[in-house]
Image (cartoon, rainbow, N blue to C red; front, top):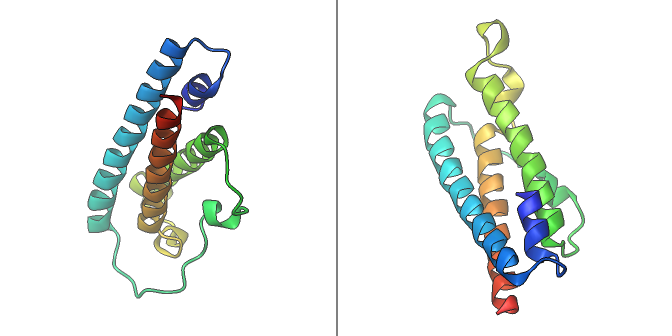
Length: 135
């Protein structure tokens, strides 16, 4: 997705190709949202509910609140999605047939999925704004 966003925002790229890259980026972000919803629904059946506790800030919240470029935002989503995918894989396919207790503590997989979903929605909003600004 990072390459697509770069093409969509690069003024040196021909406008027709930029428009296609924006459309594909948005479609990719929308599909990511659908996958996150399905993951949350499936994993919520496997993870025991716990008492709500003070939530640790996500990577997005830990960073400064300065407005970020779409390219930087897409890189952050890609990095966080990769880390989340690894955590989910380790949860579904645990070593020595046991789930690490840290995966059942805060921040839980479900909370991380929700945070990723919020980031994805924010990316879609920002991309839509950039599309409207190009028209």
